[in-house]
Length: 173
Figure 1 (cartoon, rainbow, N blue to C red):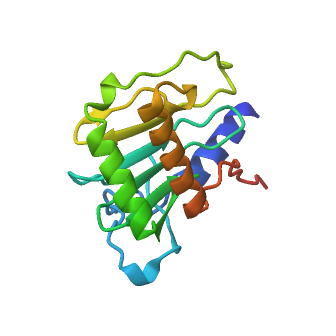
Figure 2: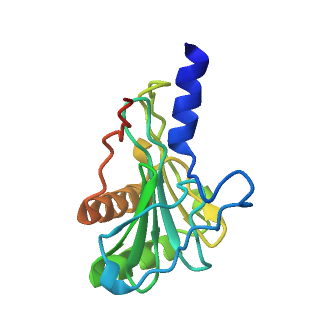
Figure 3: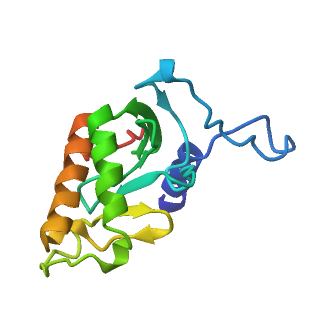
């Protein structure tokens, strides 16, 4: 019974293209136009396209919340990867400029002063920023004024984009 349930889950999670002799499935397209804003596109969540100069806001998620990755481009477009899909949205011009200015001034991100905080192993989340090969420590634990401002700015962008952390669940028949 367990093997049947596992096989059913795997079949639901893997796309079928052609048949067993059709060869590998084509890579999903990451191309989109600004007119597609907000349209759901199915892409692997663990394989976001990140160009040099993009800022990545990443939340680890937890046992009962979905994590997400937001790739903010300098022109304000943002790819939001969450729950097995991606959306293309735009960040306001002022927020984009503010984010890039603050992150650039805080380089190298690894050296940000963060506070210490206790988190549950299963319910705690981590929020980090990555830019030009540097990744911040967990911004959700506070720290100095620069760290708190980056955490606040990232939270404003997450809120503006309407990113949900509710879990996506597949219904089994």
